[in-house]
Image (cartoon, rainbow over all chains, first blue to last red; front, side, top):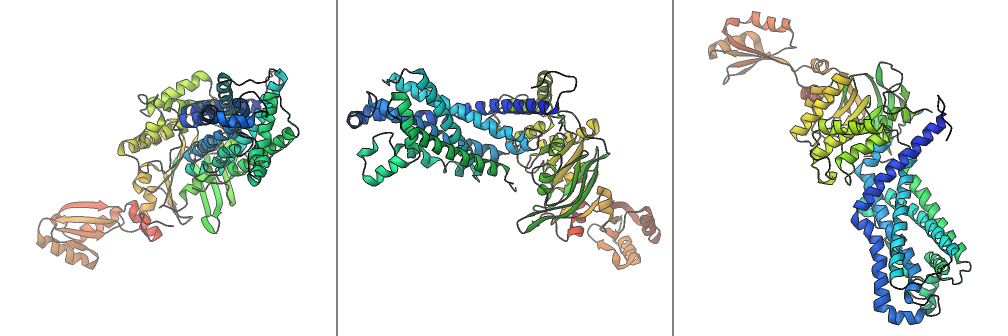
Length: 272
Length: 324
């Protein structure tokens, strides 16, 4: 920002307008996301229901198998996987919400207005990342209530929040891309659906060592396992090893793919 | 690049929209095959044509949504390619389908527009209230738009277009599928915008009556080409089909007149009428009346062709036929 002068410097004028457009659209998005009850509650409820189910119904048996992998309770072991699952479960709402915007014509209207073009995507990105972080906080809160015993180290907490923020930004780009590329609202939810299940076929619920060889191989090398291992390491002070680097690399790959796919789909001409 | 918003912008050229040699193809299909238009400020221009003629494509290009393959477009003095944001600051668009946010209330939708047009807070609220009033949406202003009828959505859509007080407004088939009351609201809005604020209106329609009612000038678009352009009256006068209808008191008088006028006149024995071709000029009427015994005529009426006749004559098919 420049200081006040009689004739404002042009780029500064445009920039303040751009920021204003992003804030305006961000407010509108958050309002709409809260009103979309199913979209808002699904990423909260799916992991919470899984958590209660696994801890209180299957936990007696499964918990024995995870003893020694970190944490005192079974909830300690499964929470990292459920946090990542909460982030992926949000993708359905992101994709459908974005597709609704594109298909209902409101975005078309914005494009005929002198609105900073990228404000639409930036506002969507921020609003969905906020929503994902709220979901993660709620899931974490429920875990604390039922006996999670996490690290007390503030640096680890800070790194944990940073890591989850990075992952959720990356996944949100992917969710936006699914929504922007979809030809219809119904089609938008198909893309991200497998991503909800994927974190379960990894190291989230039980250690991969207990699985048959082929499944184990997949579980160890699929993208979400290193992310889950990193979260677990930060939260429970277990060894992270190269999981953080691999996890960040996967997240970056998702983010870059989502970003370019979003940009291409957003600027695509839509003949009516 | 300075973008002045919420204010009419651009050097006044007297011409709101100028289009030369506009072309557009989607794949192998040539949707627009060289369109030329010149629309004066403060006038209502109507692009008339059947479904698939290319009307929406023209609007999408002029509204900066779609890039032309070839041609020059100047809107409010700004070149469409070089300064699309300056063009956007001068226009408002209401499409065929409502571009409203169904999760928000009518009031919120309008407020969103006010914020994006960067209206000062107080002015924004004032404008929102004004438009809710004007479009008869005050009672429904706090209801989510998802509960609105089609007509209400379209009225809100038009209200949203007006928030920024654009100088040029594109209305793409604004009354297609509307109930008579909402159609009336749209028509009245168009008339008052032109009368009170000298706004330029670019209207596409497949209803000839609508173009006839509202437009100062009409261009007829068919298969991506403009096949005729002029005032509604000019278009009507360009084709034959006008006639004089003479009503007689007795069958004998009818027969006598029919004999004098010859085979060009068509008789209707039941109604005792005689239909004579005419271009509608006083001279042609005088010619007919001096040829026959005008005292036997009980009634005379003059019929000029309507736009349906015009359309058929210009394109060889009627407006109901899908051009695609």
